[in-house]
Image (cartoon, rainbow, N blue to C red):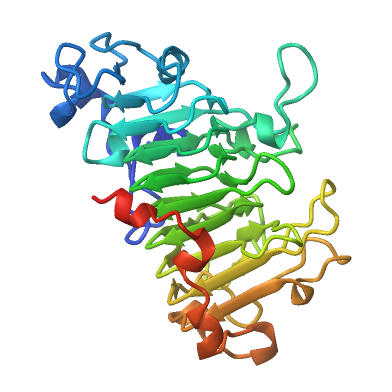
Length: 373
């Protein structure tokens, strides 16, 4: 019997470039027998620092759930070391928990999975529905958050809920400034990674390096000033649609006053769908900010055959055509980057490209120097 998509999501995986869908190797069984669940990161008996807490689903840490550890980690600058396992829960890091670090104790992000299955249209126990933001498995409101080698997933499936029309299902919503995710995975379908800010006019610089992000509709979206460096974006196949497009990789909603939106740097876009069935991006102008002017720069990135090379951009709304937004590419390559209709592929000049860098996006915050490995 083939594995279900839910099993694939929760068991773990990073075979997007070589398989039609991720093939995830189960970790919790290994974790249960591991004599040192926290590896080289200490233990409750030998803490790396007094501010370090340990999470283990088998009771060998300070908490058995991530949320319990977050709640216990009061103050600023706390660290959570998370043992291998599948943590089926929702987690919120409130704004007061600044400078928090999460470390997946394994060297493999497939081994530490935080997953839940709410969608925007899922009924809340007290009435109403969760909405897009409320569907998030993990929500980070604090500034200075860092995560290493962790999988964030939402395994809600359209096929299981044919009566639900609001199918957005967020794996991680990040609102804080100076938030970094290193060697992490974000798994879902629609609206997988919500790179946002706390409010209109509030800056939120975010950095994603060596990450794997997958989904189908607008699966990297939001208002943040975000750099995606050396990341892989993987578009999923769909059996519920008969024709293209199946979805859109990026959907920035940059505020008009925001000088920077999304920067994809040296990325790789792979696909499990037929060739040309995905768009690279479309602009999101939300009702909460009708003056937004989305910004996206994709440079030195390999675009696989899943991206439509003739028309890589589309409109989310006819009132806000993509041509009026700030979309551009520079020295992209691959079959999805072939320029067949030049007016559909705005390109940076060499001089403009000199200003499209991670330093220009993130300013005096240099997470690539602070967080190595």
